[in-house]
Structures are given as structure tokens and as C-alpha cells.
Length: 420
Ligand code: ADP
Ligand code: ASP
Ligand code: MG
Image 1 (cartoon, rainbow, N blue to C red):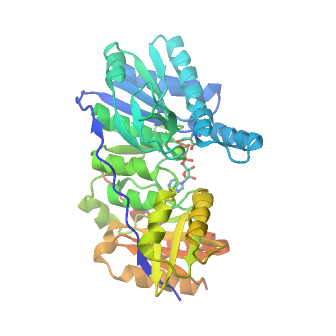
Image 2 (cartoon, rainbow, N blue to C red):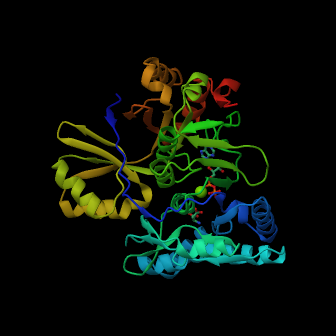
Image 3 (cartoon, helix red, strand yellow):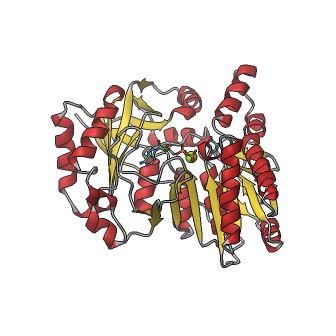
């Protein structure tokens, strides 16, 4: 029997940004696959030079090359069972510096001037939460000075300096957030996110080969897509983009085609297709707490830095989900409370997201009918005005995504939301 609950977003703190809008400023971000190797770094350098030759003030944010961050995290765990969070950030922030320094060398070889900066040198100030720090301020003076000297500025993504002067990192996928925060602070015209797929698709194209590239997605939909597992953009970067009105363009590093624009909601998006996509997440842990005072429970989880996602209250009991990476913190907070709890193993989350849901009551019926049709039993359901999320057995995640994708006709051309 499915149980229904709602999920809220954490609010984004107001960020003091140095907005001196400069015409022609663009921020281009390149992900790990896009910079994986000398050849790819040289082609990124060429793209940046081309944007510069077009007359733009160019700021690039680079991720670490390929799987560098994973390798650095693994290395830390080979040395220490519980790496010190401050030292772990010192270590894993190095990957993006390597990419930036190499790209700067390649740009200089092309006859343009470039300068690479760490997050700290670029003026990205964060709170003190190692491993998932939040940007609280962007002091862009140094970047402006470099741009005024006509340099291409390369900023190491995923990192900043805390208010107590330590190097911090912004959570996995955090280079997206660096890019959007800089775009907001610099008053950039747009922020281009270059990645290894052609845009935001109606489902992860690696899971659903017939998935379609969307031409336009609203900020609200992208927030829900990112929060429910579409790893193509970090959730926080979308919150930033919405709060500071930064138009985002997600596109391929390896093709010149137009990608997906993330913008304010527009009637044309909804006329074309009311569902934007189907997402899945198998990196969440689900906990059942038999009896606990909710205020005390969530206070303890918040103090431990656990990012609670879905919350469902059933009588005395509470079910909540949180990222698997927060497991240690969640378990020690629960034990300290003396609460009686257990983890619901083997669940994954499949969500359908679309702004058109607000005005189409048939969506829930169709989704539940689809699950029933393939014999998948959802354990919990969580909703927002534009999302329905089902917690289903992990082994059923893939076929549930595929069945919902088919039921909502997302492989059809109309799903693309052509914005032309
Ligand atoms: P980068 O290294 O460029 O930041 P990521 O690996 O973080 O790239 O994000 C891109 C990946 O996101 C794609 O390779 C794709 O498998 C995955 N992905 C998941 N859901 C979606 C979706 N709905 N649309 C596009 N990509 C998706
Ligand atoms: N290199 C970091 C990661 O792998 C940050 C990023 O790529 O956005 O999570
Ligand atoms: Mg990413």
C-alpha cells in the first residue's frame, strides 16, 4: 500500500554578489568527461578561444579530469578509515586545479592570454561545512580585473574558501554551482554547461535509449528533476540560477548542436508536453523510525548535516530518506537519540516531473495504473505540485522508468518541446 507525503526545498541564502553587469560576459563550464585527457583539454581551449574571438569576456569553470575526484576519494580511504574532512577537501579540490592550469597552458599556446584561479583566488566564499559547503559570497574583483586585461579566466570548480579560511568543496557535481554562482555574480548573459550528453533528456539516455532531448525546461521542473536523480545538473546550481535569473544552457562538448535551455516557465513548454521527464535515484537510504518526537528527530539530523529529502509520517512512526553518503551521520544521530529505527534496504526512487501536472489530474491515475500493469508495488509515494515519486524495489527501478516513459509517450517527438 502506497503512502503519500510532500517534500520541501531548503531555501537558498541571499548571496551578496558583486553585480556590475558586463555585456558579453559568458560563463562556460566543462564537466569531467569533457576534460578527460590532453586532447580534450586542447579542444576545450579552442572553444574558449573561439568565444573570446567572438568578442566575449570569457570565464570558464572546469571539473577534474575524468574520474580524478573518485580516485582521490578512494586514495584518502586507503590511507585513513575516516579521513579528516578538512584534509579530504584539501585533497579532492586539487583535481580541478590540474584541469585549469593545463587548459591555461593550451590557451596561451593558441596566442591568447589565460589565467587559472583556485576557487579561493576567484573569490568564492563558503560556509564551513567541509564536503558540502554552500557559497555565501562571491568576491569577483580579481576576475573582473583579469577580464579587463582581456584574459580568459579559468576557475577551478567545486571549491571555495570558508569564512574561517579553509579550503572547502561544494558536494559532488559542485562545479555546476560554481559556474552559476559566477554567472550571477558577474551579471553574465548566460551560463553554458558543457557535458557528455546533448542536453537534458526525458530520462537518463543511458537507461532509456529512446529518451528525447528537451528544448526547454522551466527552473521549477529542473529543480525537481535534479532533486530526484537527474545527475546532469547539481540541484544547488538550479536553485542559484532560478534565484538570480541566470539562463542556463546544457549542451554537448562533443557537438555543436543546441542543447536544453532552462528558463522561466512558458506556456509553450506546457502546450507541447505536460511531463518533462522520468528520473530515478538509487543512491538514497530510507529509514523507518518507530517513535520519535519529529522536532527532536529533525533537529538532530540537521545538526549532523544530514540532507533529509522525503518525510512521511504514519501515526507515531516516521519514514525519511537521505543521500547514502550521509549514512554515517544519520545513523549516529539516530543512535544518539536512542530512537528505535531500521533502514529499509533495497529501495530506489522513480519520479515523474512536469509543470503540466498542476492542471491535469489524470497523471497520478495513469502513473499508478502503469505500475500496476507491470506488477510493481510502490512502498511509499511522495508528491509535490509537479512531481510524483515512487519508492519501488531497487531491482524494479529500470523497468519502472521505462514503463512510465512509454506510458507518458516521452519517446514521441512532441515530448521535445520544440521552442522554435
Ligand atoms: P559532467 O561530468 O559533465 O558534470 P555528469 O556525469 O555530472 O556530467 O552529468 C551528465 C550525465 O547525467 C549523463 O552522462 C547522463 O547519464 C546523466 N543523466 C541522468 N539523467 C539525465 C537526464 N534526464 N538527461 C541527461 N542526462 C542525464
Ligand atoms: N569533480 C567533482 C565531482 O566529480 C565536481 C564536478 O565534477 O562537478 O563531483
Ligand atoms: Mg556533473
